Length: 209
Image 1 (cartoon, rainbow, N blue to C red):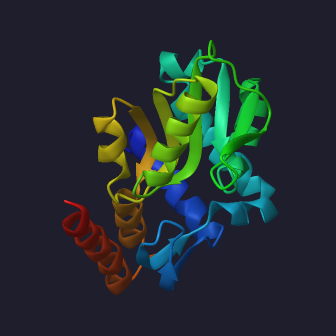
Image 2 (spheres, rainbow, N blue to C red):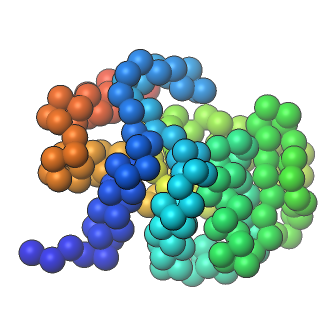
């Protein structure tokens, strides 16, 4: 059975995550306060430009499928980790970009304009609370309306549903459960590791439902 285009993109992303050694298991406290038994860090690709280029190419392919993304005026990234995707993607798409600092409560790099049709870019989506705060900041302080969010990976911790309820259209290259299934099928995750990810998703769903 052949691999479809979308499945192939997820397959390539899964292989990239393995090659880049950006998935690790242990005890981690995420920036949003959630305790997680695994951690993914796309910023490690800053030392693997070949893999970062592959990731940007995958995102670009997905980006180009959606006319409302392709025709956007500006890409907005969230500091600090989201910048690893936003900047190279903006260069590839020949789009201006700006970076928002949730900690400083401001646009730290570049300029934003209320007339811009923007896409908010981030590497990962978790609970969505940081993204929600950034969207509200841009609206209240800069009169910029964000209606589209793009993430490379959805950790499936409630963020997709939170943003969707706000009327935000969320695009994602893959969900973490999809990547885990591919890696498990390829023998790159043990059954225990695979179940750790699935059990965590289920536990977070119960916590935030």
